[in-house]
Amino acid sequence: MLKILDRLPPATFAVGALRWSMVFIFAFFGVAKFAAYEAEGVAEIAMHYPLFAWMYPLIGVQGTSNVIGTIELAAGALIASGAWSHRAGLLGGLMGMATFLVTLSFSFGVSLWQEGYGFPFMGSTAQFLFKDAVLLAGCLALTLHAGYGLRQGSAGFRA
Image 1 (cartoon, helix red, strand yellow):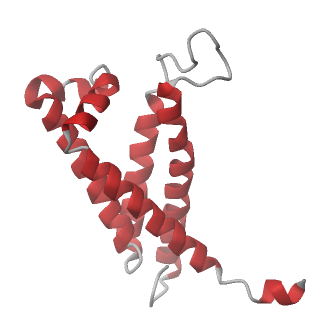
Image 2 (cartoon, rainbow, N blue to C red):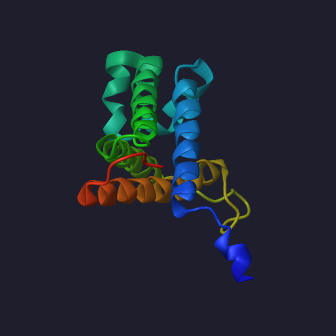
């Protein structure tokens, strides 16, 4: 058994896998915000949320979605850059955490459970939101990794 454990890849392999999967998520979700179908879907929830509600009268459904998509793409780019720069990784991780904290906060004051079934049967809003708890934890792990790297002043490749 110990021989198998001796062949495990280093922990930085897992950090790298987490980093690139988060980049994938931010890239595809960010790009989707530029499409009308996604803008309309986001507006159903975000239009009534104080953080975003003020933008809808100013720049409309698509404009607001474009802003959100740009923020998501920037977070993904910074998380990707964290492979070479702990500073960029720290900022990207913090942006990602903020993104998912905001999204998770949408769950307050909305119906989460499927009508006619109740808890624990999730409705579509809960299904949309609850996955973000794992993504928040992923961004937290990347943020901590970058923070520890900055504190240690390590040089070279950063997973």
